[in-house]
Length: 413
Image (cartoon, rainbow, N blue to C red; front, side):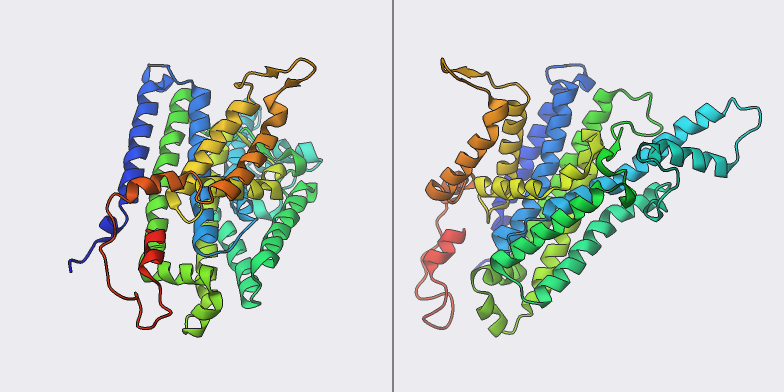
């Protein structure tokens, strides 16, 4: 029997990367930056943000669809990544503005005076002028990029270690992740948090030192960065869920007690998946918010993580491409319905305005998919994948009568 390679066992990876590359090239050619102008700069930003949401949805699918952990807190890691890169963007941008304004002074300002002026400019909105300790490395881009990985990763590691070592599972673990998100959101709303409270961090779309670069070119660069991050993240997670490791985490999802009885340290597998996906979610957030231009505590609210779970469910959990498609489709539809693109429907005595009814439509779609099409949108692509059926085998996959059957293998294919 010939030995299959990683890519031949996961043909969906090549199809996904091909579709992503074609999509990126089409958007590039039709963008204002390339002179065509058929796709506006604002819509290029929307597409770039959508790619970031697709990446965090793929991470969520590994946690929920493959490992069986319904996390209602992964958008907290997404938001933290945005806050970390936003701190450097605000500091560096404000430093340029302050330096230029003080340049005309008779006596050149000292570094301490510049630092104090930057603090006043950033934190004056919350009645302060001193930098909190968490801004200690905000002046350094390499260190702040490191914080993009470390802060979400450490939070996921500590929370996961405390939860998994206590063997909290099921709905109780979901409630704990939601409580963590709510606590973080409430903390960020406070002015004492050091992140400007309800005001959040703004002006993130203005990259320091690139004032001469048009927004059309800058938005396209972020779009490509988001596309590359999605491609790399997809390949990474496809590798994680394949092979022996993937079989173990799927076993944890289906029967955790049995996997533990077989000698596997279940908590270590869960902790690795939870931490890795938290880090990737933070990286996705660091790419998302410079395109959005602003981040505030509302972005970390529990409802955002609930939306993320809905996207994955609609796309089809347990399928990486399904999660990505679900997030992309729902995100773009949300922008269309809530942005005034969808026309209102007059019904005589009442007019349906989609800006008010979009969440109702989303909820109905979620219920319909759960009841009528549990495999989600990704299930439609399974019909194409079944064109090469699994060869007939005799007996069980394992040595005993309780082992997985060929029918079970076909369901996972």
